[in-house]
Image (cartoon, rainbow, N blue to C red; front, side, top):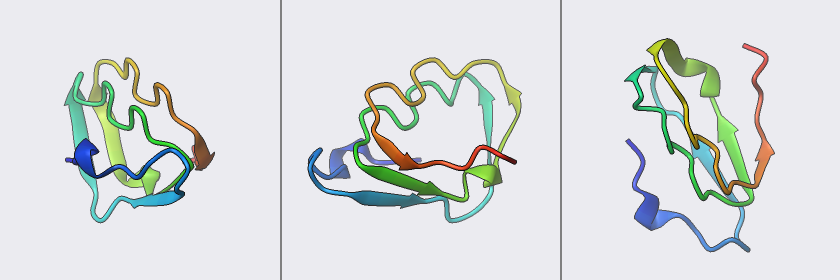
Length: 71
């Protein structure tokens, strides 16, 4: 889903844009955004989590600057 080898260094800001709706099933969300820094995540509401069982470390070691969880 995301290639963590392309994350910028912690001093660079970045924007993660979810390009299309997708589903997280079982524990697929574990560690999804792990280690991202100075980050804005757009369209997080496009992720269907209705079949997810866990999100362990989904945002571990993150510095998320903008994250809308309202929907």
